[in-house]
Length: 339
Image (cartoon, rainbow, N blue to C red):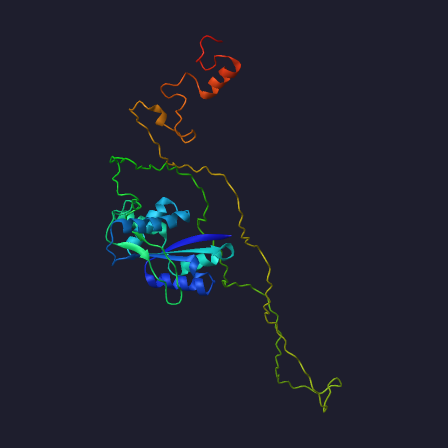
């Protein structure tokens, strides 16, 4: 399963470095990476700018980026930042996020707070001559991108008729009003809520202990005496007497023991969240002041057949009148003489 990640960079060099790392080190295909940047040389402002804007916003919407983040990305690009998005496999998701972060990806919340302090209201700027367009990646990378015009979120009109204007239908011609209805499509995307890093390192602490040490010392003393020799005295004999001095010294031995452990565990839980939004649809009101009610048709009826409640039809519905005709009843009210 693949996921889409998006990051914003302050300059082109860091963005190119991140893209090059993704393609060369993580083997992410160039077609799965997009870059968006402001094209200050473009002066298109009308239909082309609106169409370009729609492409950029649509690409963000396809990635299920929330509206508030989409406006932040658009504002960042308008201020000269580069937006990089990549579609990566789940197995490479953490590595890809680390790559974008290591190459200087902007903290979106912090940057948005700074802009709000400067007076930014969180909405897109008015349409200007700055166009946000596709930009080529670094040499050999070949990143595809779509473009948008900064500050415009309205797609180019498909017709030259001004909204609210009255169109006259010529004889033999027709005008078509498309009936459009939006449907709500709910998707999921991964959002980083923060990281937990546990780092282990070695510290040295001086310790001291007292120990009692035993020491032996040999002392040689010569004393001057004057007395007669006795039989107990061994005279005129060679003798050797040895005495060994000993001493104790402290010996340090260290024993390593495990006194505790830190366990890092990541658990996944699921919750049900109700997503609310509004969808739009086209409603068509028909104001027919003519007397030919048979021309009014519905999508479920037959062309040229008037609806049940059209002027001139008997009371009731087609189904109830059919029942009355078959059973001889007055369910529809069209046969008051019968019950």
